[in-house]
Image 1 (cartoon, one colour):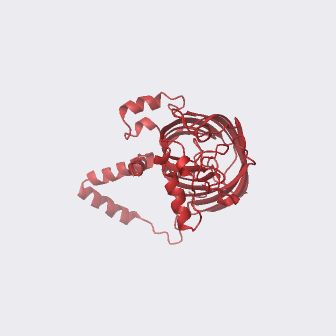
Image 2 (tube, helix red, strand yellow):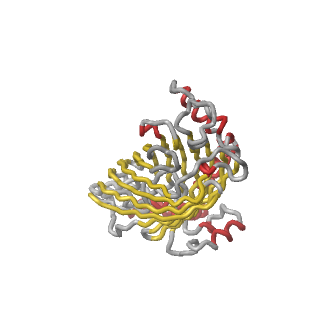
Image 3 (cartoon, rainbow, N blue to C red):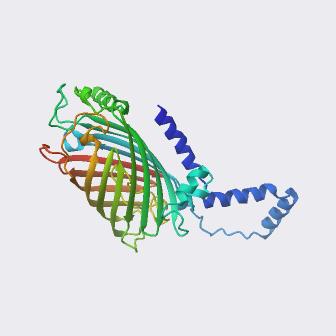
Length: 383
């Protein structure tokens, strides 16, 4: 409950961050309010006398501006789409992305001490860049293969849940996106993995998991992630049939995950969005928000595309396989290199994007009989 309340407060603060368009509107409104009523009346009379009617003129349709647009993204991932109920079995995440900002430190919504830290970042002081702040909250659940066994299954992955919040700082310059994300959460019973899984199973009349007494112990989780994404098609204009290639690379450090990652996404379709990809749930994921007014979610057009992706990770630590950091717990021997292959389809209309991604993930630990299939659903709205 405390995490939920904190997320709501942070969400409200993100949407209150000022942008140029809002500042201009505020200034105009202020000047109007401060004007003398007599002057205003005279101006209105002169305007009415000099106005030339244009009955044949077309009514202009006012569209959103990408710079003034905030985006809300809801993710849902589950191995139900792969026909199983094991390993990485369920995850949800909600991310709110602010409108574009000229400078994080100029928002007036951040403490002065935090301003100094942010402005010291390598990509924070670039006057040619635009910035966003994102706030996320999510949960991930992991189980062994046999969820009906009550005893400890030493050769299979541990039961684990992870409940977390994250703050992302994003800098966009041309076709490049830099993301710095800070994640704070809880592993163990306080992450409510058992409650979330078994309550849903009970509602769906599915057998509940019996081995949660063997899950990882409570442990606070902290991660810091940096990631860079490139959009390689400089001529992308979201008009007609288009292609796009989006490679990414990054690192994560923390007691939950420590890894280096790289990957690429290829997109082809009608009226492609001008964003940085259709990401899965992961730290430092790309910002799936419009970057200019050619995006069909901004100009009230529609679009559709298919995409293929591949990613690899060199993993130094994975608490969900290595076990607790400071206490003895169930653990298995992990594979140091893990890869994903993915493909999917997405539709965009009237500010919405709905995407489905099917993922194959290679074996993550010694003794895992085969790789895992799972699906990822992403629904976003820009407004």
